[in-house]
Length: 222
Ligand code: ADP
Ligand code: ADP
Ligand code: ZN
Image 1 (cartoon, rainbow, N blue to C red):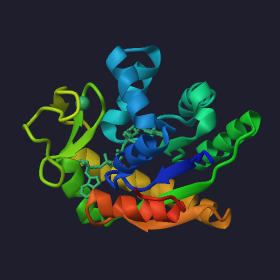
Image 2: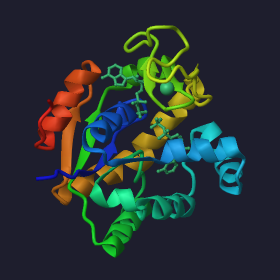
Image 3: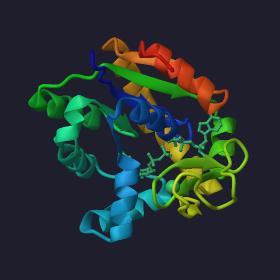
Image 4: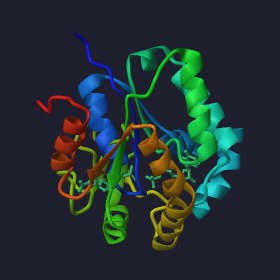
């Protein structure tokens, strides 16, 4: 029997959403849709969307719901997403959550679970300050918690590792504030009431957290 996962990964910046989404993608071949990654690509390409989004991202503010829903509509309707998807960093607001429901309804799909990774504020700063990302394949590293074997070089593809321009102390504080005021209050309640929320302790090493995530989804870790 084939297993599909259709999940949203929710949590503060630095909670480990991207890291856990990659584990799920590797294991299930589900499509991994990260709105942050899509937006960074658009910024890099200097597309009209990227130019609009950049000013918000630089300040740690949310990009408009309409732009995000447009992006999601394009990606979710792709053929490979029929067999499972992991949404990372989306939805982040009420209109986005309602918009997602509408998109899924139109595709005849339903969410299985919302994985809520929770970590305290001081851990967020430590994680984001040391985050490094491969510019070629997107693999995530951490200078202290999950370093590459050769500094600045990706173990998987030998790509160059870079530091995100919004992972500075001021922007991290702004992003955390946005999460606490604009994302968490609505999203957690909404998915809890809908019976989809699985709260997971995001502390511990990435493999320990992976064990908890897979268990919460009723999946084998092996
Ligand atoms: P993090 O790793 O901190 O959770 P992301 O990579 O998900 O950050 O997002 C980086 C930035 O991109 C956000 O600060 C925000 O400006 C923008 N962004 C990403 N996803 C969304 C979204 N769903 N809605 C609005 N803005 C978003
Ligand atoms: P998010 O997508 O929620 O912003 P990431 O997955 O990008 O978070 O993780 C943020 C940083 O923390 C990255 O440098 C990543 O390597 C590191 N990290 C992820 N999970 C853990 C963990 N369980 N313990 C320590 N560091 C982690
Ligand atoms: Zn790489």
